[in-house]
Length: 202
Image (cartoon, rainbow, N blue to C red; front, side, top):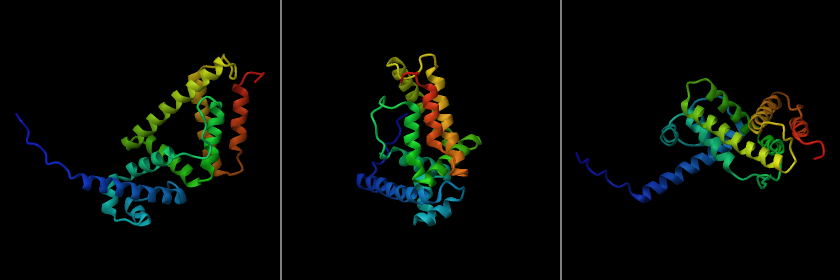
């Protein structure tokens, strides 16, 4: 059976839709950077962003999808602490990332909200995004650990995959503690972890 051809979508209309979605996303990032990820409705966020509820629903579908899009887009943007992979230890990489995050507390709160949303089991988009993000980050950090073990910077008796998971767990847990108590020294704790993983002479 031959299906009827679908009418081609006008390219101009598609390009305008992409541009409009990006415009809304850019504004949403600004809003979440200020307000964090406190649970609220799409309708309330639409008002803060300056668009109709219908427009926000059209481009993002649900609050869950908006949270994912905002965090994903903001995390892809280059920060001040750019570096070449392998030139710093995994704990130092997370320390630099945390330093950037602390300048935008709202995004740290959004990240925590997104993780909580993923864990509750009722939000598949958030769960898939966070699960994939952790898997990718563990793989990248484990590769760094192996590279630096080979160069003698990090201890050779440490399992690279477990070390990667430990560094992420330490950084994320410290971020939550910092949100609750700004006196918690996130950077110093990660430096201590770095020393524990490093070879005595490095």
